[in-house]
Image (spheres, rainbow, N blue to C red):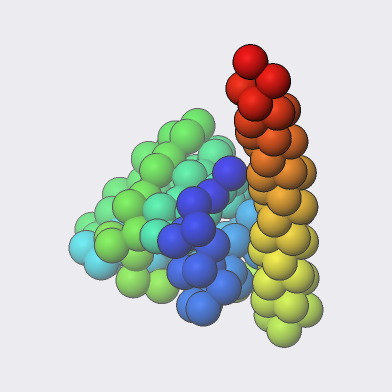
Length: 130
């Protein structure tokens, strides 16, 4: 589960668009003028990207194949959004997903706090009896 800080970053930046294209094949262009084409598996709030079945092309045009590839967010220059992705719908869906997770987390936290309060009251009642 993402931290509160990561959820806030995802909600307030276009990282949510990158997170929405998980499961799509695309090209990630790097700052050193290399590029990676492959399947986006995971994108965290800091734009760190995990990819599978990749073709890495360096700045000289030499290509290499990788089963798994990890790119630190700070090394990404551009991410090409696939034509099959409607960007507005993807962003809205991803933001809704983040909000649903927050709501679920809030409900779980309320339940946990209610249980703690109940245990505290029982302890107090027990200590008053003795």
